[in-house]
Image (tube, rainbow, N blue to C red):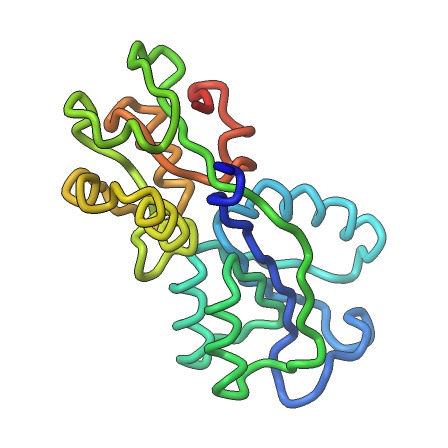
Length: 206
């Protein structure tokens, strides 16, 4: 079934440091959260509720691709909570003992979708159609650093059309850049998470 080809977004919440965090209000007046770019809208909304319940605590976000955030942690960036979009980023930090393993949690799942500009006249039915000659550019996360791009490459390989699409791939720094490229019509199509597509009225899901 085609549904089996859709990868899930694994989100993990990990306080960093030598010991598990004490209650935030008792430990610090500021919490630094590094999170995958695709979570920007959801976490920003959640932070409003959190601040109402904890007015003395400031939440500071750092949004980027999970690969970029992983490297920041490895280089000693001050982070209290890390929410990644892939197991491999968290596994790498766990292997280096840079996280408190007992606090690791899966928070949510997601799925990849193919999107086109809202006014697109292309007759696409699915991922297989990206190999068609009228598709010159396909935006996706950089597979080596962006989980959504890594998942997209795996999906296209399973469909046996990655070889035909690789040269067309416009590699973006995160899924929000992919979304922007499609919104502006700079590419014929893009691959993002379903939650990213849901926030834009300028694209539609194929």
